[in-house]
Length: 111
Length: 112
Image (cartoon, rainbow over the protein chains, first blue to last red):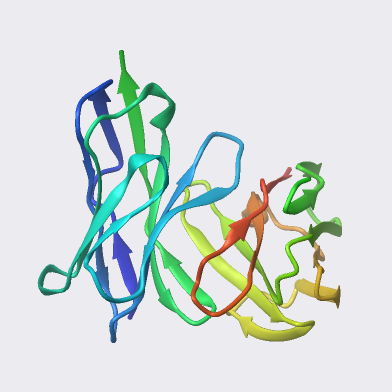
């Protein structure tokens, strides 16, 4: 069965520190991989996506993610976190029109 | 101009009532979706329509009936509301089958 695991429910980082959010997936084939961000009271916004090719993908707002097939992982990173990055982050996998989402990781940024 | 808009944003109602949520997208996309986000923030697909045709129906109770009058609109009607229907319902659209979704702001349904 397809599934996405985000092991960290909450993460707190200091402003200016680096960030890594973990995502592991279980899928029958090589899926498309996504990270979405949800600010309070808002819908989800796409940060970045991986379809094929270079396993390090760049997204909006200075985020990047690396696809590691051997580890079935697609971790999200940012070298220097800003207070405005505080939000909930969702990893998703899928093909076609159907995405399977992880449970999300809430990022808190302390000044 | 909001790309994917949903109404209402908040809905509080009694068990047993019938309610509808409307969704419109002005992105020119062919595919629209309803996702349900429960209290634990799990986001799960319910339905998907491509150009007014139902293409995904994920074991959702038949109290839930989506309707797509045209490819820019996808409404969700829920009959005989139950406590477990309380959730945030997100409408989304996409241009193709790559999974890149554009979400509305969500409609928070509370069933008392």
